Image 1 (tube, helix red, strand yellow):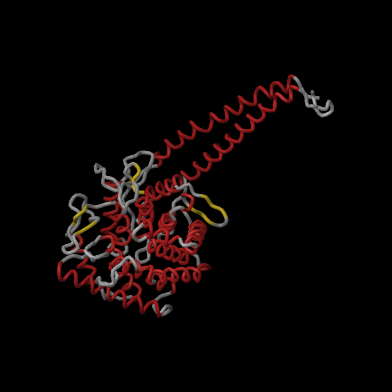
Image 2 (cartoon, helix red, strand yellow):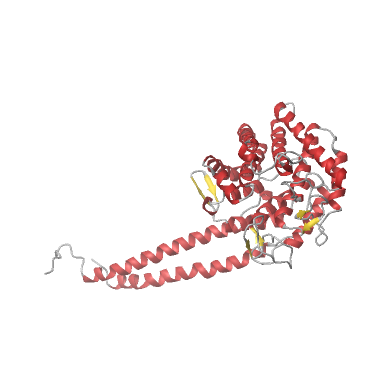
Length: 446
C-alpha cells in the first residue's frame, strides 16, 4: 500500500537524486577539509622565524604557548613528564620560567607577570620534587645540572628585575650559589685538569658544565665585575683540550675523572652547549656553530632538521635523543632553532621554524597553543624557549654565523605533494556536480 501523500510527494526523480546529493555533500566536505589543510600547511611552511619578527610579534606568538604550559603545569604535567624523561619535571619548569623572562624583557607590560612566573619556577626547582633525581653528595650539591640551570634562571630574574640592587634576595642567593659552583670548577680543574663536573654520581656530560660556566659568567656580568675571569679562561683551555677528535666539538659524554671523551659529539647535547657557550665565548662558539651545522645538517632534502649523529654515522635513538626519524632528533632540531636565532643564522632559523610548524600539528584554541595534541608539554617548552631566544650577555647583533644552512628549496617536495593532493578533489567535486547541474538545466523543476 502506497502511503505517500500526493500533495507532499516530491516525485520519483527527486527521490532518486537524494543519494547523489549526499555524495556531492560528502565530496564537498572532503574537498573543503583538504583545501583548508593545504592552505594551513603552506602558511606553516613559510612561518617567519623570530629573526624576522618584531618584539611584539614574538611576544604575541609566545603568550598562547605559555598559557598552555601554565595550565599543563597546574594540571600535573611536570610530574607526568618526569615519568618519561630523567629531568622532565625540571625542564618543564625551568624552560617555562626562562621563556617568561624573555617575554618580560621584550614587553614591559608583562614585566611583573614574567618575574612571578620565573620565581614560581625557581620554587619548583628548589622543592623536594625538583631535587629528587639529584644527589646532595656531589660538588656542587645536587650536581652541576641542577646548580647550572637553577642559577641561570635566578640570574635571569636578577637581570629582568633591574640588577642586584633591585632584587637583593635573588642576587644574594645567586652570588652564594655561583661561589659554590665556581669553587667546584676550580677544585676539579686543579685536581684532575677536567672542566666537566658530574651531574649524577660517576657520570658527566659536558653540556651540563656549559650551563654552569655560563651561569658563572652571568653572575660576573650582573655584578659588573670580572671576579671569575681567570676561571673562565682556564675552563676554556681545558675544554678545548678534551674535544671530540672526530668532529672538533664538545663530546656528548666524558670520563668523570679525566674529562676525556667516552662518546663523541651528538646533537642533543651540542645544540644546548652552543646556546650557553655563545654567552661566554661568542667568537669561538660562532665558528663551532658553523661546523656543527655542516656536520649535523639533515641529509633528507625536504626535512631541514638536525641529525642526532654526524653525517655518515647512523645509530638508533636513546633516552637523551628520543626516537629518531630519518636520523633526525626532534628535540635537537627544536633547540637548534634557538641557536640559529642567537647566531643570526637567518636561513637555518627560517627553515627550522617552518619545519617545526609544519610537523608539530599545532592547534590553538581557548587562548592556548599546543603541539601534538599537548601530549608532551616539555616539547612545547623547548620550542617556546627557542622562539623567544635572545642574548642575555651577548646581544644577537654581535654574532653572525657564516653563510650556509638550508635554502628555500626544501619546501618544494611539500608543495608538489599538495598539488598532487588538493586539485584532484576539486576535479572530483566538479565531476560529481556536473550531471546534477546539467540535468537541472534541461529539466527545471517547477
